[in-house]
Length: 434
Image 1 (cartoon, rainbow, N blue to C red):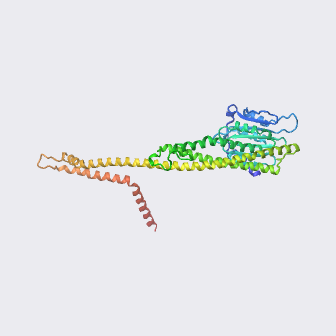
Image 2 (cartoon, rainbow, N blue to C red):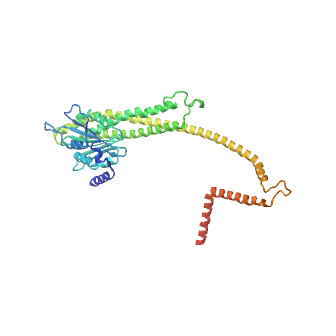
Image 3 (cartoon, rainbow, N blue to C red):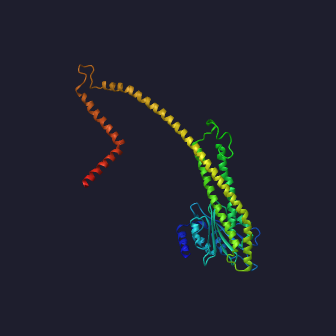
């Protein structure tokens, strides 16, 4: 494990990018939320970087003197170029406050998906969950029942919505499996909403425009060609791009939901084993088991929801692929029509050029003889029509004509000439070596 931690630290320090420290002290505000057993309605609070570090390091005051379950969660934004909007020093100090296993840094800098867990000597139980929307890193201290977590936004801003869902389960903070469950539930809830709002809406729009789909209009499939709508190539290309993007998104979401099912199965196994996560006192063990049992009861409906969503994603994927095939056929048909029109235009141009060539051939002999007979070297009013210097015309005309044809051959046949010359030189070289 020491080698893994050392490698993770090295890769993290070499590849992870951070914001410059002088640009974040006043420019960036970090959102955070703290859940306690006594809090009635937790609110999202804002911190500057120095305040965020102090907030993470400050212990929770408990007037009763007994451990009270609590959870601290802060949001760190990540840009599209994988840069974390926080200084390197502050980020490392926060992980140290969390007593997080350094191996988790590799998952952060490599933008990993899925669930990963680390628990080595000297560090608290450290868990990581990554998906297309965010990454979660958290530790659980069994001595104080404290969960400390970082929410890293990967796309848009989902922190407040996630915090709102998390607050609904604030009474179950005595187990580190809480964030596993909330992350899985939030992801299927969010994906379900987005799939209906964009992927399904996109497919339905294109199906309605083309007439191809599970609810077609008109005589699709049996109509004569004159009833089939014709679309611009740019429109078909745009639709095809959108449908392929929908198919890719659906596959990725189904993949992430299957990972969610594995997380729920892990929570179930922890409940069956009676996992205590290092809790020592009888009261804390009982509370941890009670919270895990409550999560176990909530697992079944979420599993059914995810299974239904995965099946629906598979149906939408097949639907998108069939629509993509239809769009490709329409695009091929439009391209063929464009080729036919281009061929017709080319034929018209060829006919025009042929007409010009024929007319040139008709007038060329007359033009040539008219120019020849008008030369001063031909004196038609004298007994000797052809003068002694008539040869000068041919002395210039014939060599220049030959030179023009030679230049033409050199320009258009240079590749063939070069190939022949190289072949000759290679042959000569081989004979010389023998």
